[in-house]
Length: 243
Length: 108
Image 1 (cartoon, helix red, strand yellow):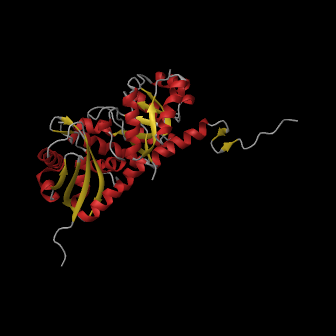
Image 2 (cartoon, one colour; image 1 turned 90 degrees about the vertical axis):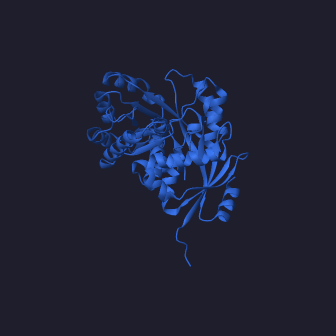
Image 3 (cartoon, chains in turn yellow, blue; image 1 turned 90 degrees about the horizontal axis):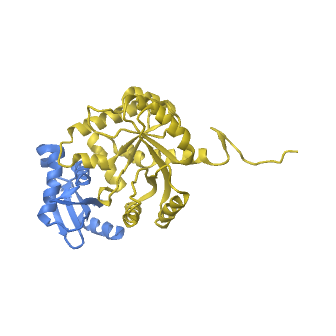
């Protein structure tokens, strides 16, 4: 089984720590990692990261995290950067942004940062939009682990249950990512699947959220970004010279 | 004759800077189960720390077979033992101690 972690926050200012995190990911059984990058990152830096991942036997995925304040800002960001990244996630900070992100086919992952049940979360309207556009709901496990530290998990689990149920009712894929920036917040994929038991997610569903669903997002986007891609279902097989 | 309670043994590896003491590990697991599943859940879990090797940071935990998902979730949720940050990874799960040590050896 090929496990994918689409959100590993590598601290590139501390290269040693970043290398340790990559090695730890490989040790824990992941085979593909998504690393959020700045839009302004130099291609040399990206190739260096790719090389470090290759050395550990990991497939490196370029990811962009957008945190727009308005739908207009989201559209501008997507227009500028979509074709430079393999995975684009949007932190939904307001209802308007969440609605726009849900209906835009260029958005791959929807993230809702806070686990406060009173704050914004994936509701059925957004799930319906996301199911039509092909976006997935991403849940950061490090955020769940941190929110449980010394506090009650009642609100967190209530909210996660509601989000997963909304996503399920419209067949929106759910993706579990580590979201870890420290190696002590990383867990084995099977441990994340076990953790999902806390918000009533079955083991098979949890394993899909760590394998099939994220791999499908990466594969779809790599096809789209390849040079021979024309449109969904259409690609260049052979180029012939014009007479 | 069949046993009254089927058991599962979990081989755990602790990721931390300073290895905690045996009692701290046991307390951390118990507290995690209690916090997440309450006293009824903890009473059904049948938890017991069979073995703890401080040097290797390796532990073997016993629980009731029916409580395995609950115990795995609780173990994964542990982020601190005492005051030190820690990650607890389940290496293997088995029905007997003998098979567990064989499987854990082959994994490591």
